[in-house]
Amino acid sequence: MITVCLADNLPVVHYGVKSYFRDHPEISVVSNVGSFYMVPDALRNREINVLVIDLELDGLKSIYELKAIIKNFPNTKVLVFSSLNEQVYAPNAIKAGAAGYVHKSSKLETLGTTIIRVHQGLVMMSENIKKNLALIAKQNKTERVYRKLSNREIEVLRYLSDGKKNNEISKILNLNEKTISTYKLRLLQKLNVTNLVDLVNKAKTLDIV
Image (cartoon, rainbow, N blue to C red):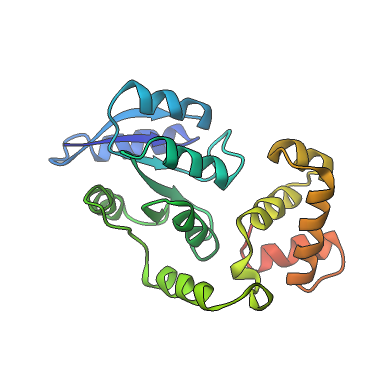
């Protein structure tokens, strides 16, 4: 039996996923957590084969924190289950070490199939994501467009879109405020805009945030 920990903010997601897999012959949801701070204890307290986690989970401030979980719990496969744009966030999650990415618009049957396959050691992603990763590998930094924003740039952009100031973002990500300003300038250049309002609007138009 594949043991699963589900990490998600929404009780309805916990209820729906657990109900769907209640009588599943291969998958058992044995742990449910509602914040990222609870994840390490959940993985330490019992053997978890697959961690199914939302990138918007409360307390998960950065993809680098997810990367640390992957490093510290090598026997647990990490599967991202999120409503964030797959084209933008899946490549970064896979590069960070996640074993797969399932969009929340997918059927729970797809989630189940993916859980089984990542447990078998496969890395699961859509064909579009495979092409996107291959394209990123061929391009250098100066050729990147919005789809190839770095992990940090995407994180900073999300917080800017939420209305947070540079000093607030620096505290959340534990970075120098000047570093945040540098990321902001890079974002303005890469998205070819000149001010924060246009930056946020363009990011929303391109479905980055």
